[in-house]
Amino acid sequence: MSADAGQEKVKLLEVKDLRVWFPIFRGVVQRHMADVKAVDGISFDVYRGETLGLVGESGCGKSTTGRAILQLHRPTTGQVLLDGQDLTKVKGESLRRMRRQIQMIFQDPYASLNPRMTVGSLISEPLEVHNLGDRDSRRERVHQLMADVGLNPNFINRYPHEFSGGQRQRIGVARALAVNPSFIVCDEPISALDVSIQAQIINLLGDLQEKFHLTYLFIAHDLSVVRHISNRIAVMYLGKIMELADRDELYHHPIHSYSKALLSAVPIPDPVIEEQRKRIILEGDVPTPINPPPGCHFSTRCPRAASACREQEPEWREVGPKHWVACHQV
Image (cartoon, rainbow, N blue to C red):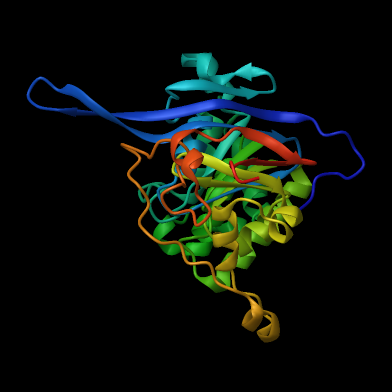
C-alpha cells in the first residue's frame, strides 16, 4: 500500500499535542486523586491516501489515540484537525455530520456486531443514522458493499453468529465503508483472527484503499504486518511517540532504543541472517501510566539511558529526512 508517488502530499489529519487523561476518583465524596495518562502529548500528521502504522506494546495508548481522533474519547488537551477543522471543538449534530468522513474498524469482530441485527441492518445502520438514501437505495448499497468486501450479497438476512471470524470482520469493514469516509482508523483489525485469515483481511484493506482512495491509521502490535501495510510507522511507548519514519527507513535504520528492541523481536525467514542477529531484551516492567517516570518515559528500561534522560523530557525533532525521534542520545 503506497501513497501516490510523484504527487505532492496533502495533510488529511493533523494531531497536535494530544493528551487523553482518565481521572481516578476515590472515597465517598469522589475526590480526584490522580490521572491515568493514556496519551500524554503526541503529535503527528496523516497524509491523504497513505497508511500510517501505529505500533507499540499493549497498554501504550494506541487504541486510545484512535478513539480520541474519532472523539469517542474526548481529549483532555490538544487538537485533532481533519481537513483543517478541529474535531475537539465540534459537538452535537456538527460532530455527527463530521463522522461521515471518519470511521473505525474495531478489533473484535465478535463483540462489535449486534447479534440481534441481520447483516443487512448492521451495514445499513450508518446510512440510516446519516439519513442517506431511501429503503431501496440502501438495500442496493448494502448488496454492493457486501460484494466489495468478498461476501455473498444473498446472505444479507443472516445474523452474525452464522459467519466465521474473518467474515464478521468483513462485515465490520463494509459497515465502515457505508458512508464513503475519507479516513478509517483500523484498531488492530486482525489481532482476533486466525493467522490464515489475517493475510486475507490485510489484502482486502489494500484493495479497498486503492479502489476508494482511503486513508488509514493502522493500529497494531505485530510489526511484520505493519511493515506490509504501512507507508510510514510511528512507534509508541507509555503514551508517547518515540520515533516516526518511513517504513523502510525505520526497519533498516531505527534510532530509538525502543524501536530497535521491538524490531529485534521480529523473526526473519532466513536462518543465516536470523542466527547472526542479536535479540535485544528489555529489562524491567513498563511503568504505570498513572505515574510515568520523569524525563524520557523509556529511561527506566533503556540500555543507553543517562542522567539527562531521567531528568529532562527529550525534544521531538527531525534527525533526518522525514525521520522524527524523541531521544537525548541522538
